[in-house]
Length: 409
Ligand code: PSV
Ligand code: MN
Image 1 (cartoon, protein in one colour):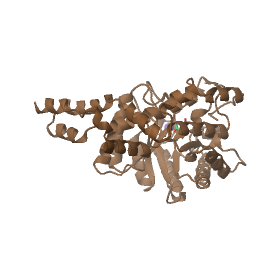
Image 2 (cartoon, protein in one colour; image 1 turned 90 degrees about the vertical axis):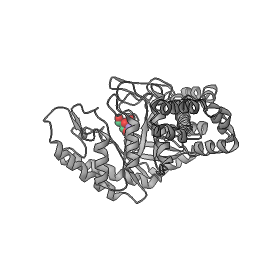
Image 3 (cartoon, helix red, strand yellow; image 1 turned 30 degrees about the vertical axis):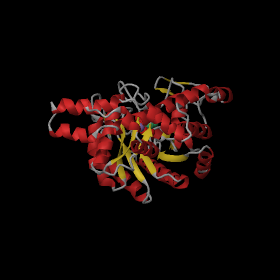
Image 4 (cartoon, helix red, strand yellow; image 1 turned 60 degrees about the horizontal axis):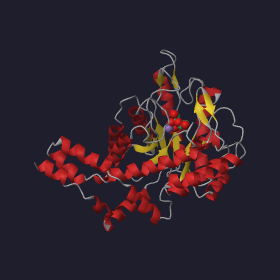
């Protein structure tokens, strides 16, 4: 009976618009920043081939120009993740790249070393049994830390393709120990203000074992490495059925959640746009973050980032769409009535608790988003504004380069 009453007493929608609450929503949206990746604007593909788009970005200047546009449309993407091998050429000064970013109204964000593309890393980078490969990997990350210093970035984002393809191929424990040594070396080389994010992935490109296969391995390694090493959760890097929000809640509570690479997937690491397959899953992740904050956890340094390569969708559209979806789901998750939820949880009223989440998920937050955008001088509908503009067609006319070979550069 009590449950029914509480369920029926859902907040009238108008209350979301009362002055004070609206201010809270606006503050929440002001504080929500999501980093976009330079490689999301470049020509990308699958292992079967690369698909070309006339408007794709080829140079770091073009990638930053595109990122600047998404930031202008959404007001949420002041930083751009860069991939060292794809974005920095020998002889080019990283501080010059930082200036280019500035020109487009953005800043260089996380620095992603590339420890997977060169032939020398065929059997691993810092876990390889080949000492030269290990030394080169170590040096490349040390150089990447310097790039961070020169560009004003405080995030070093590490992903290792390291692993083996067949049982018995290499000594798994020896590889683990080499990884620990490398992580410690890099951690000690970082300035106090830099955070190291350690990403995990169960498979691909390695098909038997991957040296950091899951969040638990990543968390153990971070704990051994030092206080500025944190886990990076790429939502596409889980085996089917994994409960990602549970992982997120657990890591926050242990002070080990560093950030996210958002993308969606149907099968594996598909790089589909965030929320395109399962928006409720993203909502549940944000719900756990808001819940942790409500319980007193400091969630302010979580790095929200997108890691998507749009093979077929127009890249600027896909990125703008993604950022809008992220804002929408972040806001919806903030609408969860936590008092009511706590009541249902206390009463062990499962249905009431679940409905509390669902009613927030199904709320239409577009009027709030539109009001916030208008008040911040942003287009009411960033994706529509992009599609009505000539930004993409202009790029098609002006760019239309011949794409380079491998990689996402
Ligand atoms: C690997 O699949 C990954 O998620 C890493 O974060 C890389 O840096 C990125 O994708 C490249 O697209
Ligand atoms: Mn990733």
